[in-house]
Amino acid sequence: MTTGLGRLNSVRRSERETSLCGNRNISLLRSDPFDVVAVIMASFSGDETAPFFGFLGAAAALVFSCMGAAYGTAKSGVGVASMGVMRPELVMKSIVPVVMAGVLGIYGLIIAVIISTGINPKAKSYYLFDGYAHLSSGLACGLAGLSAGMAIGIVGDAGVRANAQQPKLFVGMILILIFAEALALYGLIVGIILSSRAGQSRAD
Image (cartoon, rainbow, N blue to C red):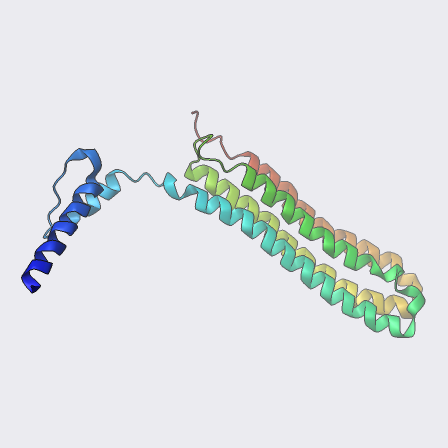
């Protein structure tokens, strides 16, 4: 009984090895695994994994940007809530950091949509060059949005508290927030440029 099962397993294993070779009719020996590796590497160009890097770039753009937006909203929101206890009339005026932090998520959404719509291997060949271009585009926008969100959150928290005690600091706080927001805008611009480079590696 055991011998019969062993023969059956060996027959199934040989059939899988033969189907792995396709139409090349290459016989693979179990005693030499390097033949299997050689056949697989001969049919593998690396471009099969390109969509993985492209989708990873789209996810990175949205995730990191939303992380920055969430941190900036939460950090500055805590400051607004604490300030509103003593000066409730300044709450709407101090909501600017929360709005500027929320915009960061939109930057990541834009890049994620651009990247995801550019990945369609059935309509057009998608190479590793394209995947790396989309990955770098997503990381540039996402990490820039994350850093901008951290800056907006810290400045917004301290700024709204200080503005409640000294109204003359409002203009200075807005200028600091604008320059912090510009960091994410730089990442958005570079991300768009990098994503536009996809598809230019070779002529189809």
